[in-house]
Image 1 (cartoon, rainbow, N blue to C red):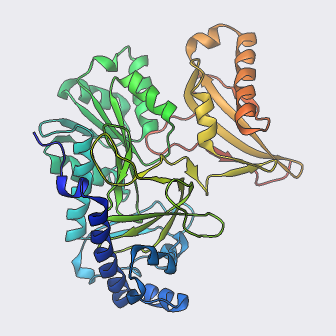
Image 2 (image 1 turned 30 degrees about the vertical axis):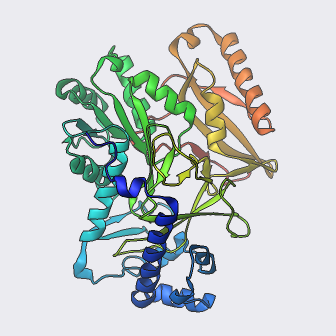
Amino acid sequence: MKKYWDEKMETMPVEELHKVQLQHLRETLERVHTKVPFYQQAFEKAGVKPADLEKLEDLAKFPFTVKNDLRDSYPLGLCAVPRNALVRIHASSGTTGKPITGLYSADDKEQWAECMARAMWAQGIRPGDIAQNAYGMGLFTGGLGFLLGFERVGCGVVPSGAGMTERQLLLMEDLGTTVIGCTPTYALTIAERARVLGKDMRKLPLRVGCFGAEPWSLEMKKLIEERMGINAHEHYGLTELMGPGVSFSCEAGALHINEDHVFAEVVDRETGEPLPLGEQGELILTSLQRQAMPMIRYRTRDISRLVRTECPCGRTLVAMEKVTGRSDDMMVVSGVNVFPSQIESVIMEFEEIEPHYEIHLFKKGYLDHIRVDVEVVPAAYERGSKHLQSLSDKVAYRLHELIGITIPVAIVAQDTIPRSEGKAKRVIDERGAIK
C-alpha cells in the first residue's frame, strides 16, 4: 500500500515547491485585488499591487489581515466568488463579537478533503478503519472537516459528535472503533469516564487519535497515549484559513504544513518583521489555492517557529513547532509573561495531579494575581490534608522555578473542575472588580 497520500506534493524538492507556491501566490493576489474591495483598498493603502510580487520574499511588502478585519467584513465582505458559488459556510462562535465566517466553493471543499486525507494517511489511517468523529458537528469547522478527511480516505465513519461520553464508549466497544477524533481535553474526559466505569481503553481496538482545536502540551499527549493505548496525532488549523488541514503530525512527530495550500511566515510579534527559519514568533498564514475566501498574511496570534530539516518520514514540507500558546492567551502577572501551556507542562510532571485544572486571574487592590486550581487522583485525597498541602507546595515550587513568580496552587475536591466536551476553558478572569 502506498506510503504517501500525494507523494508528488509531499516529497517535492524544496526549490520546485517554491516555484509552485510563487505561481499560486501570484494568482491569489490578483484574485483578491480584482474581486475583494477590502484587499483592493488595503493594497492601495500599503502602496503595493500584485505585480510587485516577483519572489516569495516580496510577500512581506503586503499588509496583514487581522481578526477584526474579518469581523468588520461579516458576513460575506471577503467573498471572492459569486454568492451562488458557495457550497459551505462555517463560522466561529462569535463569543467576543461578531462571528467570523469561513466560506467554501466546491473546489475549496475538494482541497480541504485532500488536505485532511493527506494528514490522516500520514498518521496510519487506512480504508476500512472505523473512525469515530467526536468533534462537534455544526458551524465549527472541526467536525465536518474531519468528516471530509475520514470519508476521502475510505473509513467507516461514526459521526458521534461531542458529548454523551458513556455512549461514546459504548460505540467504541460495540463497533470496534480504531480511530477517534476529538479535542485532546475531551479525549481525557472519555478516558476518565472509562476508568470510573471500570473499562480499560487499552484493550479496545482503538489505535489512532486525531486531536486538535486547542493547544495541548507534549505531556498531555503522552498521558492520552498512556490512558487510551493509542498513537496521538495533531491537526492544526483555524476557521480563517480552512479549518483543520493547515498542518499535521507525521509518524516521526513533525508538524508538517500543507505548503501547496498554505504559505507560512513567522514574524516578530512587536514589529511585524519577518523572522528567519528557526526563530520563534507569530505565525502568519496566506491561502494559496482557496477560491471563495482567500486570506492574505493572516495574523494567527499563535506562537511558533518554522523548521525545514530532513524528516525521517521523507516529507519535504516545512514543519512548524507545536504551538506553545497564543499571544492573546498570554497573561502578564507581576511583569512576567505567563502562558497556560507553561502551567500545564508543570502540572503534568506530577503523577498524582489529574489533567484537570483552572487558572484564575484576580485582583488584590490594584495588582493582578494568579492562582491555579487542580484535582488529584483519588488515592491522593485519601492520604489526608498534610499530603495534599505538601503536593500543592511542590507544584507551586516547580512553577516558580519555571516561570519566576509565585503561583499558589489549590487542590480542590474531586469533580469540582468542569469536564470538557470541546475546547476546555482553562483561564478564568475574575479581574472585573477591584477587591
